[in-house]
Image 1 (tube, rainbow, N blue to C red):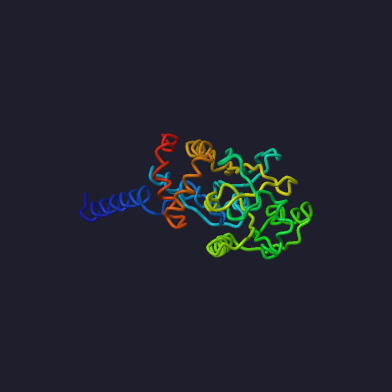
Image 2: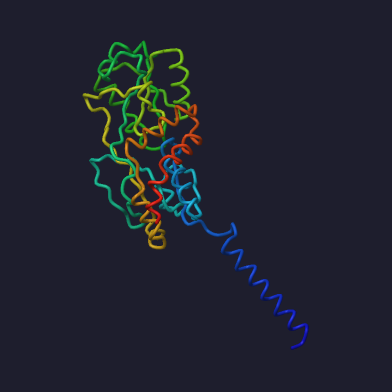
Length: 282
C-alpha cells in the first residue's frame, strides 16, 4: 500500500473516531427532556427538583420559562409540563398531542390570606374592615383567567365587600407581604396552596363559607405523546413523580431557614427527599 493512501486511511479513521466520541459525550447532544415551567414558586421548585434528580442519574435536561405550559407543549417547545391547575370538578383528559401523567399534587387551594395578627378566620369577617386593609385586596395578575383564579369579583358580590383589586406579580406580592407584615399592618392578599410562602406560623387562609373560590384543585402533569413514545422510562418516572402536603411543608420550612431563597431551599429540600425518588429511576 502506498504511504500517501495509508496516511489518508489513518486520518479518516481518526476523524471518524473523534466525531463518534463527540456525539456520545459532547454538549451538542439533544436533551432527553425539555421541561416547561411558569413563573410560580412552587412550579419552579417542582421543576428544579426534577432537573437535579434526572441530571444526577445521567440524563440531559433542559428547562424553559414560558407563559403557558400547555401551549408550550402543543407548539413543540417542550416535552413535559408539571403543573396545570385543574378543578377537581373537571374530568382531566389528554388530547391528540398531549398525554396526562397524573397529578403532581392533590388538594390545591386558592383563597384569601391575612396575617396571623388579624383576629379573623373567615372572609365574612372582612365586612367592616375594608378601610383597615386599605380598601383593597392584593391579587395575583396572570395572563389567563385572572379573575376566576383570584376570585375577588366573586368575593365582592357574595360578601358585599367594598374593596378593589390591586393586581401584582408573585414577586411583588411577596414584597407586599414582607413590608406590611414587618410593620404589623392589616392586609389581605390572594394565596394558594401549595406555595413556599404559605407558612401558617405567619399567615392564614380565610374560610370561604359562600364559596367565592374553588378550593379543590389538582395540579396536573402533561407531556407530548411523541416524546412519551420515545422515552418510556422517563414517562414512567414522571407518572410517579408527585409530592404530598407533608413533603411540601418541608420545603416551606426550608424557605424559612434560608431567608426565602428558593434555590437554596430547593437544594436543601432535594438533599432530604431525593433518596426516596431515586427508586423511580431504577
